[in-house]
Every structure is written in C-alpha cells, then in structure tokens.
Image: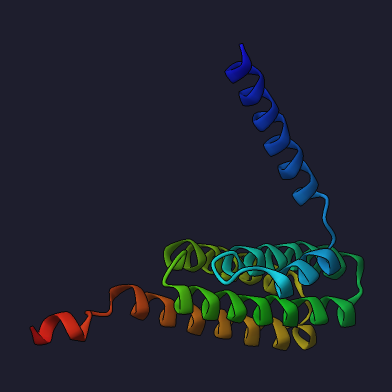
Amino acid sequence: MRRLTISIFLITFTLNLCAAAKDETVAELKSRFESARPENRPELAIQIAQHQLRNADKLYSDGNVEQAAAAVADIVTYSEKAQDAATQTKKHLKDIEIDVRKMAEKLRDIKRTLAFEDQAPVEQAIRRLEDIRTTLLKEMFAKDTKKEKK
C-alpha cells in the first residue's frame, strides 16, 4: 500500500512539473538555462528556441516584423547554445540536431509568407541553423581518433 501511495505521489509530482514547464515564459526559461546543470542545458536551450519560433510565427502573422526578427535572432542564439552544451557534454546530440532541422523547416515555411524585404533575417537564421546541424552531425559521426591510434 505504501509503495502504491509513493508511486501515485511521484506520478502526480511529475505531471505537475510537466504542466508547469509548458506554462513557463521565455524569460523564466532563460533564467533557468543560466543556472542549469550542463547536461540539462541542451534541452532548455532548445525549449527556448522552439518557444521563440512560435512567438516569431505569431508576430509575423500579426505584422510585428521588428519583434519577430528579434525572436528569430533568439532562435539562432539558443540553438547555438544548445549545440555548444550538447557538444560539451556529448549528450542529446541527435535530439538537438532533429529539433534544429524541424525549426529550420518551419522557418522556411514562415519565410514563404513574408514580403521580400522581411525575408533576410529569416534566411540568415535558416543558414545558421543548417550550419549548426552540420556541426552536430560531424560531432555525432566523428571517429574517435584516440581509439583509432590503438
């Protein structure tokens, strides 16, 4: 009986944490990122980038081009931070690469809806995300030179 009670408590606690994480603002996520442990940073950085991607899409739809461009810049910044953290810890490389690829695809879709003069920041962000992906793929498939020397 006691084990069942503890299990129910843990499940409830976990669900509450997940619900709270979804309701966090970008500012809260950014503050959590700064104090997070290195192995948790890649996931937090990608959450921030994804949140900003949704914001950018909405802002472009609403006609707030300057604010949307700032959100796009945040997408790139936090994708780079996710790449750096994943490369440093050697964890979540594949997940980060997949998320960055999906964000680049979404940015391509957004770019198609924009006026020509508003497309430049989005195009630069897409190129930078592709560079991040390439770096992550190289890291994932790089052969360990120490093992080869043996």
